[in-house]
Length: 205
Image (cartoon, rainbow, N blue to C red; front, side, top):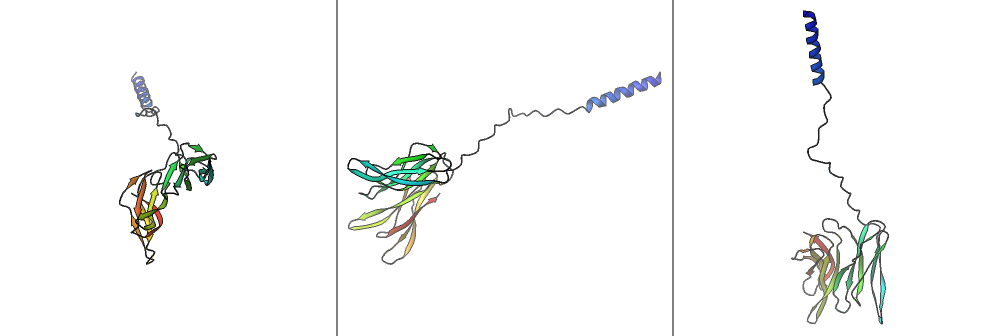
């Protein structure tokens, strides 16, 4: 009888150990459903080429239609144009977003010419990107010189910086604009009186 009781006690103990050593349950996440994978950022347009075409408006004919085509990516077109009467430059953006290899087109204001053409990434990249620049005449009485430098970018905050030259002495120098602008505004800086701007760039802020 005593032997049976010992066997029964031993069996009960072994059964308890088996229950305690059962398979562990997988932990249930407390944050709800797992986060959906994020889409990869769109690739910037690449393999781009650009050209300018004539515009015919009655008796007016001007080189004002800007085109760009890329091998990859999604983009719009941007043209840096100039009014040849006033010498003032400006930028126009196309409103239509297109995917490669389609052609994106924009036109300068009537009678104005396109001097450069660029593909603008959609969606835009971070930082200061897509910058273009140009130089304009300065008129001071009877003194006229190519000394006003301008820069414009698609994204970011920046100032204009120009490399200028005194044509009398041949000395070059750099001037940086004091005003910081946000894209797509134009940043401007001017060389010293009578001096010309030879190159322009946008300086990130």
